[in-house]
Each structure stands twice: as structure tokens, then as C-alpha cells.
Length: 204
Image 1 (cartoon, one colour):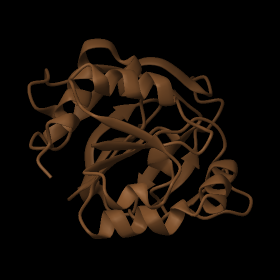
Image 2: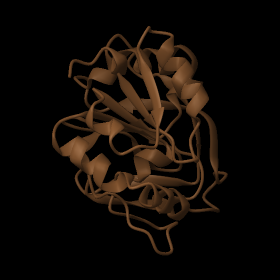
Image 3: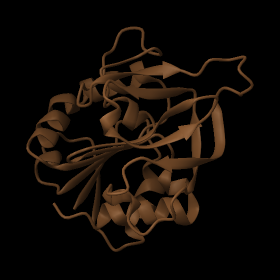
């Protein structure tokens, strides 16, 4: 069973539909208790960092997510859900992240020949070919982005893939049972759906 955390700020339907293409059972939930019994957890997200963390707090999900990850539950953060994995964000005025991966989230610099937000298709440069999400994928797949902020891990060792948008930024992180993708795999056609399938098929 894969839990999709519903805190009012995610593409719940599209993520769930992508997972169900591969016959997996899903549970859309905002209950901390449900996270104790699921094999895998997905935290999607669209919107502002402060609002997202505040909603997770109100629903009692912060500690529930940390407890699940710390006991080894496989976890995937998507877009804003990836950014929340880190310690802090330049977007945030008051809230901190989950600190599951050391590092911060930064705003793209304007006036460097790129538009902000970064929106559309861009190519990944895979840094860790052994990352299970990339199994069976071409070497440099194109995926779909929509974001103004990007994660900057404290250690480059967790970068499974990077993307170039007026400089390289972390597009996929991987640290043991924790995965994060800055793009939207559910909107990234064949390459993204292959990553979704790989996540579904990960052994717990």
C-alpha cells in the first residue's frame, strides 16, 4: 500500500492515477496513523513552503513522516514535497523544513537569461546510475518542471540527478529510503511514468 499525503496542497489525483496504472493499492490520507501501516509514502506538493509546512503541522503529520522515514519506510517527495525534506527555504518567512536531508532551498536568480518560474521540459544529468528510480531509463531523460525555488543539498553525494537552468541544481535526491524529485513525474510522459513504476516496484 502506498500512502499519498493529502494536506490540501498536492496534485493528489494525477499522482494517484499514475500509481494505479501499475496495479498498486493507494491510500489518500491526512491521518498520522495511516502512515504507520503503509509500505511507502508520497508527499506531493504545489504552492508555498510556509503554507505547506503549516498544514502538515495542523494535521499532526510532521512527526508521523519523520517516524516513518526513520523506521525505513520508502518515501518520495515531489516538487514542493521534495523541498520540504530540507532544513529551510528562502521562500519561508517562519516555517522550517523536515530536516530529513541537510541543506536548503534557494530562489532562482532573475536576470541571468532565464525565466522564473522555471516551467517546462528540461533534461536530467544522471549522477548516480544506480539510483532505482532510473532503472530502464535512457541516460538523460527529459522531464517536466514548474518551480521558482530549487533544493541545494549540503552534501552533493545525495544528488542522484541534476538539471541545468542557468547553472546546475539538484533535480533528484536519494539517501537510503528517501527520494525526492523537483519535477513532476506524473506529468513527464514516458520517462516520468517509468520512474513512477520503478518507485512502485521498489522492494521495501
